[in-house]
Image (tube, rainbow, N blue to C red; front, top):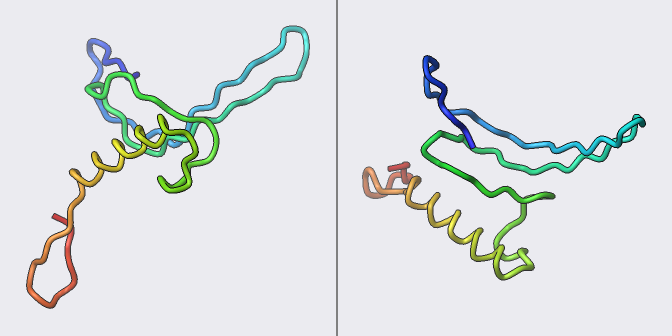
Amino acid sequence: RLEAHTGFPNLDWHCSRVEVRHVVDGTDDSQTQMFLCDRWLKTADGDIELRSGKLCLLAEETEDKLKQHRLKQLQHQQQLIRWRSFVDGAPHCAD
């Protein structure tokens, strides 16, 4: 979650991934878990959910709950980015 601090600009941030490292006391060993994000975050987003591991297509998703979550993400992206015809016969352009 991004939080705006008084006196600082409230800017969007691009997050490619989040790495969580578990360090064992007294040793140099650590385990790292990576959560892929690759999106712009803003304060208004509130809490976001990230998955660990590799990104996959909706058809390749194995868990029903994760399929529903991915479907909601795709529908949100489709509302943000739409295609339309500028001139008949010409390639479509982003709306």
